[in-house]
Length: 405
Image 1 (cartoon, rainbow, N blue to C red):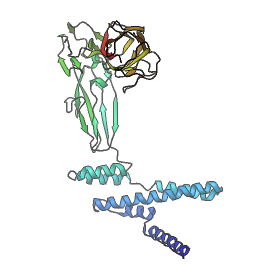
Image 2 (spheres, one colour):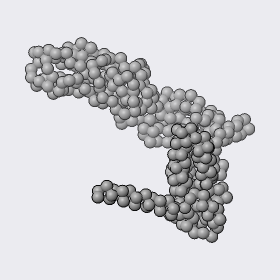
Image 3 (cartoon, rainbow, N blue to C red):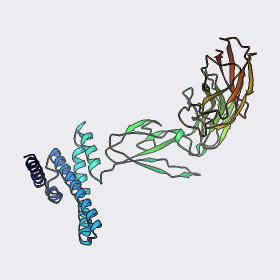
Image 4 (cartoon, helix red, strand yellow):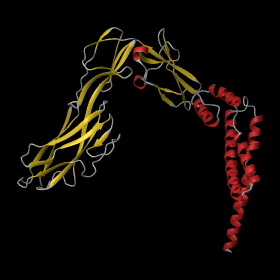
């Protein structure tokens, strides 16, 4: 009886599957029906349902064709293999045409929001012919200089795009001047540099607009000072952070560096100077294997640390030293060579590679070593100073305390 029930259930499932396949229109019939539809008169919702049904039919039949292809290859059946390839090629052609896409887009753009954005996103995902582009034209020209460059961006309409700002442009400021914005026309600013805009429904071009003058941009202090042509007073930035060391103003496009703030005479059409800051953060200090509040005496102890270059200048020739004014501390190894650390990266005293995220100290290689005298009373607080210097003589310090158990 149990076996009979199982057979009946299997038969029922097979019949249901056959009925489903019979009820589902083939991709060929669905595509033929779409070609005879009046796209200008049929409702957009009905057209979307019809096209989505076609897509499902194509996917279903492509899966079947790939199975047939695999089976034919396994059996060595050339005729079946060729037939499967022909089916795949035919199914690939069942796509919306360029003319159909244009007709649909015209109707979609006549809608109000949010329907317009909803249907436009659907058309972008459905038609291979609807891929609106945003062209950024960086070109500039005068009597003595000509520069031509265009960048094209293709995104789904309605998605966000952040326009390039001066920090992302490697154009000679002495030749072009300073980027002041992006325009729908070449002579009027529509969007600010770095502004986030929405991808349009149709192809658009934005023109880079430049202006003669000098800009001094300081990201740390969030200042942006612009001067017209001529002799200008170079700003002297300050920081409330003691770890930040001002290293000068730098124009990446010309390689000019101003280290002594005074006056500057504009050369050519202008310059874009960015404030350079050398800054380093000493983060976690790690006592290897022991509780920092319960240090043993008469035992060699290792210390490591993590640090991050939080400035915008690469630091080179880094060296770390550990010192203590306590009479109970004897240094065995109080100096470590660290090497180079690029801006924005983190490392430890013994990391093999610098990374963008903070790292943990691993192992005893290249660590500070010291001994606490066995004459140190229990509970004695030991002061330490960790100092990191670079090859320019700049230094950063971090004071901490450890306790004898």
